[in-house]
Image 1 (cartoon, rainbow, N blue to C red):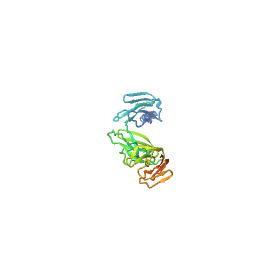
Image 2 (image 1 turned 60 degrees about the vertical axis):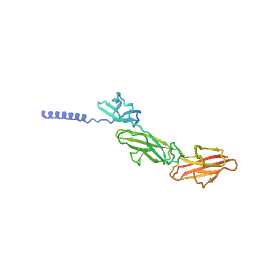
Image 3 (image 1 turned 90 degrees about the vertical axis):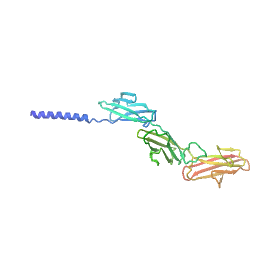
Image 4 (image 1 turned 30 degrees about the vertical axis):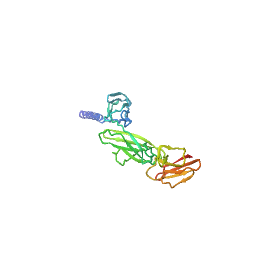
Amino acid sequence: MRFWLSFFTISLFLIFCVSGVFAQSFTIEPAITLSINPPDPEPGEKIIATLTSYETNLDLANITWTHNSDIKEGYGETQFIINAGLDETKSDVITASIILTDGQKIEKQIIIAPASFDITWEAINSKTPPFYLGKKIPIRQNSIRVAIISPNNSSNPVSYTWKRNGSSITNAGGSAKPYIDFTNTELDKTESIDVAIVSKDKRASRTIDIPFTNGRILFYEYSPLNGLNLGNTIKDTVLGYEKTVSIFMVPFGFNTVGKNLISWNLSGNPVSNQQNPYLLSFNSPDEKGKVDLSVIVKNIKTIYQKAEANLELIF
């Protein structure tokens, strides 16, 4: 009987010991997330680092933040604010050391590699006046190019990922080319483009909104001797014509690909048989008075590229 009691006592002792060992060995670490906002900061930009958890109460935890020489410590300190470094060749490290109420010690780190780049965009294959040097603002159904123009400061290969209006798009040139071309077909007033630059040592992303304008018609005076007068566009009412009038028209923003149907009208009468459909020449009326000029342009390969303009000519 004494033997069985001794055996039972030893067995219970072993069970309790083994249970204690397993309880210590299999303590589950609660899920804690360390995130930053913005996720891809520019050099010198303010960063807010935040700890979150749905499995433990971080308000009761002792948290120590470190970033270079900056240190912040306290209970429930779930946020830490810093400025990203200005040197794009160096990475920043934010560390959060957490001591939970049960004594568990957890460390979270996030590496920040600030990078900056610029984005340019404009319509391609769109009509402009001769010698025009300004930005080509797209109209609907234009082809558009979005390009990254900043130099690559990384020594590692860089790839680019693009999204258009929230959906991923594939660059025909592959992920190594820092630009994309696409044709707008939407009715929205803007196109939203997201681009991310990714390399082994850093990542940066930006979002831009590309506005659209309506196609419009520009008028210029034309002289057989001097050519186009590009110094000023003709608008509204024009005075002082004497004999022959020559007006050159530019459908600004219309696609250069595809034929434009052009309809001229003088005081209610259609004009045809011009040698150059963009140029209208006519003789002034015999008597002084007013001539109403109008023109309609429609690109036959598009739905939305259409414009109309009017001039009032006083003789």
